[in-house]
Length: 611
Image 1 (cartoon, rainbow, N blue to C red):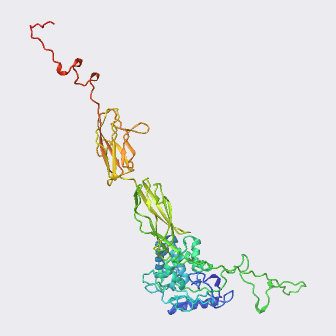
Image 2: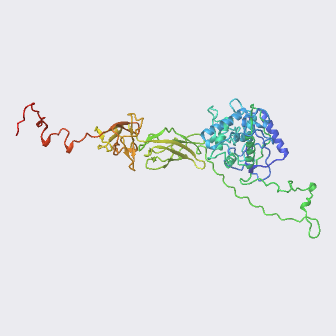
């Protein structure tokens, strides 16, 4: 059980022995409620009975706890955890139901608040100090302590004064509160942090499963990362505001981290040494120990009332009468600082999760159909409203939120969800990420992958049907123009590749015949920098013919798979007639062909008449 360091006064051996016997007797009695026995708290600056004192916000009300320390010989095999054999020191063993509750709580918290990194060994250490692992695992089949475990009444008699807050519902005391159950929650804290971890429909502080999960969530509050030493210390001190309590819990944590094993319920070692609280100033500290090299024994008067030799000094006349020594003024303790109010678990941000965001994909220049949505939960796992969530776009696609922003902040609504504005895809195809960040100190982050695909076309066709021909070494007189569409609408900004090929399927590129020219004027037979205009139109650059005649193929492929194959012909023109005449113009002196007849030969022996 727990107690504030400033309300403690160590007892002598006799008082401790009496208290130990009382605890053992009560633990074995099977009484309706076993209460930790505490000795009388006397001396010091204890507050008067009945004076109203605060519990400083501690989970246990700073009620008493067990001060037993681990054995000097710790378990072997560091890191072996619960896989050690079921033999060895009883101190290293944890009852089966209790151990299962701690591990279940660790897994549950890891699912809702992974950034906390709660180790089950910390729950085991606190459970050992608070109740001796539910009094050695005396729990029923459902994990409920039987008899229930109760701390002393917090009535201001050596402890804080905490008047009843639950009508005795949890602790059976309608006058003052008491710490309850294996993890020793006071009723007011349980009202805020109580859990139903065993699924029986009740939040029972006497049930080890319910109590362990409540303790885990309580320790993780305020964005703590329990893998960090400072956060772990703050968490333990929030459970009981005592540095001695912290040291005791730390010693058991280290012990259990070296190894432990499962033992049957009800067979665990019972603690024997309860702490003794005193009501002291909130900022008081234990008196320092002996100085190095000094005696560990205080100077006390000798029997019979004689003063100690060290307390006598020679007088001025040689007598041995003691010379009074002026006492230094007693410094006033600093004024106590008011305890910092811890937010309730319903107000404490616990986790951030995906609220059903689907795949993020869009075509360049288009709006994404899906929006990023997250849900914030509090320390109890319920939706938490009014949590600021910052969404950020990271990448080189040019994608932005509506309004042209890369970063926006949205607060969660009543259902705990926050939805980012619509994303507008940039013109550059590729992948980018959207991150959602919430929380301060130890923020939670979710990352979503998104993709921008290039603009696409499902059809690409020529805009005319002219036969494309050119003489060897010349360029084609007619330009090639095509139009790309997507779902019968003009496909603007679609990338198109033009390639000279040998086959209609475009499987074999051609290394001869028609070609384009690059920026340096060199022949190229593939162009990959072509894009349709706002109307989906594309006019190809000039096409040149080399010296080889023949019929060639040009394949145009648009992003999205649409393609068209265009035929190109290279052939020499027909031979020209002399002086520009056509081949059938052969009559001399401009005579028509029909006016020219072949010369007729005269019959032999016949003289040709002379002119």
